[in-house]
Length: 320
Ligand code: ATP
Image 1 (cartoon, rainbow, N blue to C red):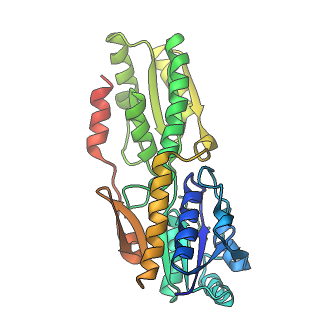
Image 2 (image 1 turned 90 degrees about the horizontal axis):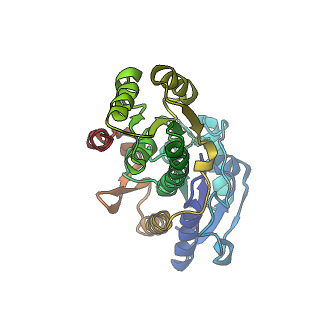
Image 3 (image 1 turned 180 degrees about the horizontal axis):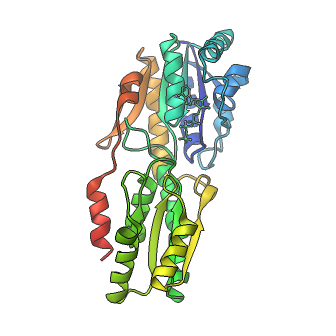
């Protein structure tokens, strides 16, 4: 292994830069040449890459987004696209590729691996929806960004005795929603993983809360469920409590990464390079029970992730 490539793919996530930095610096430390590929698999197909130096990753550890930029490539999603990507990788002398991204990016990497091109994946997405790992780079920063917004909205909701309905990101998964429901003290949280009944799961806890003396209410809706505006209208009609919907949107994706995201990204980036140094290929990096580990990429993509029922119950108890 002499030359490795690194790219970021799918949605950007805070901490991706820290991971790129760790890959580049650990790679150079071990005597490897590291090529930075811009714009994900689209950039690989275009040969949009250059050699990274110790200095080219300076002053990026604190920055959100990704200096390598990211893209979604339809061309890469075909056998011909994958073969072309490998032929371009060979033109540049790449012996392996480190992919930082979400599960879509993992599937792209799996296609490369299954066509004989060595890959390592690092989990990078704010959604924390990758089955093989308990944690993905960017998740912690996104949670803190949402929490900051909840605290601000709560000030107004309390002052006006209102109900706030907040729609948060997470694509098809409810991990952001469930965690901020607990950290933000939500009366109700609606997750894509669990069927819901608006009267049972939202209206009833609000009315019961009012009867116990609550002055304001917070309802978290996961993006995968959606409909925050309609839900807010329904709450107001049924309860006569003034209700406002806020859809946080892309504010949740950017921002300076938290210490936790920076440290995990640094550790995972270095771990990825070490795997390649040891001759291990087609692995995905994961956090399991607090320990950084790795799995075969095909096995990882077979795994299923479920929502933590204890956390769902905990939120119900703490919302009393
Ligand atoms: P996030 O969850 O943060 O959006 P992601 O990695 O899941 O990140 P996607 O847009 O799903 O984001 O995937 C990024 C890229 O990976 C796609 O543009 C495509 O090139 C490749 N990709 C996605 N799905 C597949 C698939 N099923 N097979 C092969 N390649 C894929």
